[in-house]
Image (cartoon, rainbow, N blue to C red; front, side, top):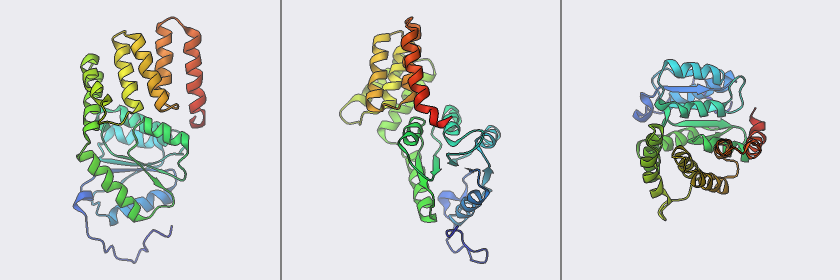
Length: 253
């Protein structure tokens, strides 16, 4: 708690207009961490009340009743943990591009894979300083307001796919396979889902496997391969991929 200013210490840092009017959700099962974050945010210039939630379920309920501009969440919490909250967060169209900062005492390979798949925007390692928090928040907000060409193309493709326009989505996704862009598992996975919707099963399978080549722990592609083999009448193969997915995420149950 050394980063928490004394109650008698003046908040000498001037209000930052970048943070002043943000509606922020802070989620952690430790009251001391929530208090620390809320106070740091006020020092950084946040002028609106910071909404605190003690776990993912409480946070999810708050997200249904109010729109937030930024979420800061711990990973390990009761009822709904931070990763499940992040998945739900990203599945809600209102929060498709809203910055989500994950707080953790460790960044294991499994956590990185699961969080990256659900599109976490950044990490803050405990114990953290106010300077680190400010730096992460500035970076996240800048990226949200100035998306890269890659991100713009991907978001457009995802919206088209969600609107049941898979062929149009593929037109954008194929642009992301060019030499100017780094290959990403999420691109191949979304391409596979589009081909699956078009009943182009061989192409779908190839895309899902390419996603797994890039990220062997990409759960969505394992689950999609299970769905694909179920459609093809291969229950044994479908079960094999489902078992791999369950084994991979068993640490997060």
